[in-house]
Image (cartoon, rainbow, N blue to C red; front, side, top):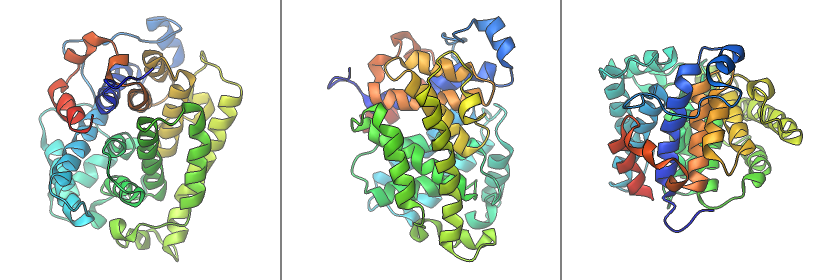
Length: 337
């Protein structure tokens, strides 16, 4: 049970990193090898000092730091945040620590940004890879944003690299899941709330944030573009509902909601892992790590969700000093706790 000292933003940022670090060693292992190596429950301890994360956490930090910069210089607008995120993404691209098998879509798009191309030209229009989804979780942490601003910004940070409408819609759902959990929504109420959000936003195109991105996709209207993404997200919510109707904590979650390599499946499977263990954050990220798909991405989303609900004190205390980028994660968390 959360308390006034729960430190929910810290819990979510560190949870993102914990899940990432726990799932990274299992990302390309099948279930038999995971069980042989870690047992039926999957990995439950961080390894290494520090415990290393992947590009998922690195890019999540980039989004969070850009967001902090923008919120310190109001008003928060697309014109303000876009160059800040561009700079943070290029910094990530050229960082000597960018050695964690980063996604090809993010690399290609960030190279375009580095070359000075407008983001509408640099983004990879046909990619709905999960790379833009994990880094959306910080958009759910600051208070004081309108729903339109939170939604538009979540979609924009995705669109800078992944121009596919499903990547945009899934990133918005990710941000709102974190926000709703932070504000006290019961986990059991999330699936219905997410479905309502998807249906309500199905024809909403955030032109102020996305400009004419839609026109690059070969469709007739902005509504045709964005509804495609929302429909795919509604499809994964159908699969989530089916999995929760007959929950199996021991099964590979990817069998229910997908392998997580694409945006809507990363969101759905990460959320499934959290909802299977809503009061046990270590088990939630362990379940994500013990999966046949993109295990670090699935586990880091589960960790961000769990931390937003339960707070920093729900995680093993010793992990806070062992995780990579601990000082930066703590600084971001303090700003929004």
